[in-house]
Length: 349
Image 1: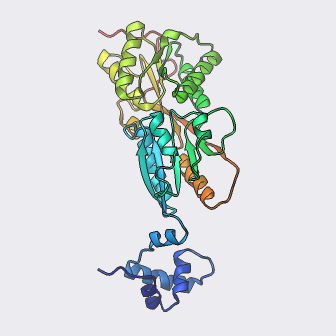
Image 2 (image 1 turned 120 degrees about the horizontal axis):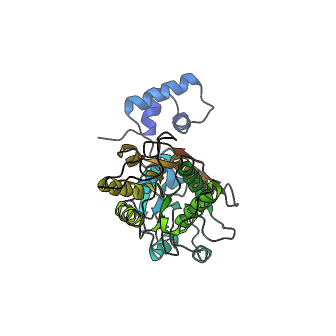
């Protein structure tokens, strides 16, 4: 089947090829009657603009890359979906890569090894340092997602959330419900674990603000932020003296913690409240449903794509810092009456 051309639409609508191009590109100086005729011809012929040809004429591929640590992590999978949707609205195709948070792989990503394929890069690094970024000589525009890298000014646009404030709010939510032995799951003993350190800081700030004594035995380190890690860490906490609440540094850790509590015979939220972070869809279907910090993933993706588009248009030389808002999503894992807790966890039988 021969693909309809711009010329075919113009002939059917009785207008010039230039007029059809103006309608396709949504230029304002077209009369409503002419626009309606062209749109009807487009629909009748099932015409689709040739985005590849348009991109090549502009000296671009129409392809951008998104590099994330781990697509097995639902947060990054959901973020990728939002990026694809935001990019699609600009007619872009997204290539997705995962680095496993490995510094060598992340350095390959920023080295421009795929610069002949992509117009720009959206990148969520874990292990890179400020020195790595300073040594980048690749000119492909890049927008960073997640935590800031280094302490000085960066030449790269950055989109993230306030992890300290979000973790503080999540922990205060537990303290305001009368919980005094509030555990934290998610600290990692690696140089790359910046997000965990920020969320630990917010947790500690909230304890101090609420007058809750900080107990180092209630801070459970993990190797990774997966379900199995959360389940194992929750088991260690229960073995050493059960907490009455736990703040998990992401939702997959929290889902693992919920499983261990269920197996051990603890009631959630009656005996132990559980708070997560990321608002992944799985948490809304857990039993009980998971209270969590909900960053605006759609706005993170849209902001990053918009910044990249501005870079590609040559519209700015100044690096932008975008802090996307978050909210707390209160669900069954923390929502019990303030007077409904005795203050002592029930022992598993």
